[in-house]
Amino acid sequence: MNKTIQPLKNALKGKVTIPGDKSISHRAVLFASLAKGESTIDGFLHGDDCLSTIACMKQLGIQIDEDGNRISVKGKGFQGLTEPAKVLDVGNSGTTIRLLSGVLAGQSFSSVLIGDDSIAKRPMARVTGPLKMMNADIDGRDQAEYTPLHLRGGDLKGIHYLSPVASAQVKSAILLAGLYAKGETKVTEPTKSRDHTERMLESFGVKVDVTEFSASLKGGQELQGTNIHVPGDISSAAFLLVAGAIVPGSEITLKNVGMNPTRTGIIDVLQQMGAKLTIENERLFGGEPVADLTICYSKLSGMTIDGDLIPRLIDEIPAIAVLASQAEGKTVIKDAQELKVKETNRIDTVVNQLSELGVAIEATLDGMIIEGKSTVNGGNVQSFHDHRIGMAMALCGLISTDPVHVEDTEAIAVSYPTFFEDLQSLSGEK
Ligand code: SPQ
Image (cartoon, rainbow, N blue to C red; front, top):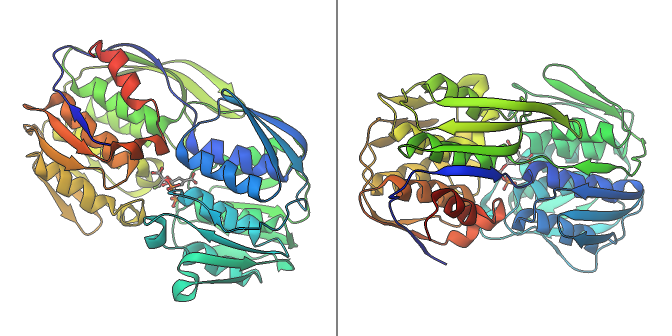
């Protein structure tokens, strides 16, 4: 599907309730499947990636029923999964394949994980390597670096893993395998990655010890079914925050946005660039902080984004690049080499596609440099089947001189299926 975005005649005005957090929705389904008894999940994200997690868990013998935004999961306890009759297909979802690898490493049965063309290129040894150290039997192309992955686990031993990357997927996979391992399993990271796994395991009754850069748990702990409330996804909200900041005259309120400090780098960047942003109604929602955000069109200044800030906004960099293109002065993004192993190489795809529309931007080895106050021309761009690239390109169309045609916008349904409807309701345009 292709979409033509017409430059806006009006400002963006109004309120949007942000759909459920993708990272939290995945974990809720996965952990509920391993828990004893029934769990309910409210505010679940019906994005393609989270639906892939549901489909995989059903194939592993778990009954999952959907009723609107509420999901009910009949967990069978952490030893209750059954051998799948067919390969498990994770679609486009890195979170599904990596977290599920951790769970399957603890099962004595055999399973095979595959995904789409993007998944086939994403590195898996960052997860399969430590799982093998725990005694899991895993094979795959190039020594389990790439899919298809074949896993047969059981009999795991706890390890203390010093992760070379700050990655919540790596940390979560190892901790999940740790539930099945003898003794303690600990992961230490160079910088803290998102901590939804640690928080949610606690909600399911698992004791997790957390320090600044480490998380550890003891094997053999049973998860107990519970009710999970999924907050809105700050990574989805980021696109509307950027839209509000760059479309002249705009003022929009985003309700129910997850404000977990490991995810709020985008808020720091907006504030530091000078955006008019107000944070209201801060509350705790199912173990996760949440707030309502109001953003107004703002005069912005470029900045340097690097170091510890990067893991707190890694998925927002495509949106931030568009934001930076409208700021006064240069924005430098460094230490972001992890962008190269996302759904696409997001250094290349962001830089190539924004350049296509006339934005002054150049790639560096670990990020990009964006010259501010660029005129965004119309033209043809692609998502390369990467949801976040598709949405970033759509933002360009809001402020471009001529229409922007974005190819393969169906990818956006991976994380934000109602993105265009929400934009339309804010613009008041058909
Ligand atoms: O699930 P997937 O495909 O890896 O999704 C992305 C995204 O942009 O939605 C990354 F491409 O988000 C990751 C994120 O980058 C989701 C995630 C999680 O839920 O644990 C953690 C981050 O990845 P990583 O590799 O840093 O652990």
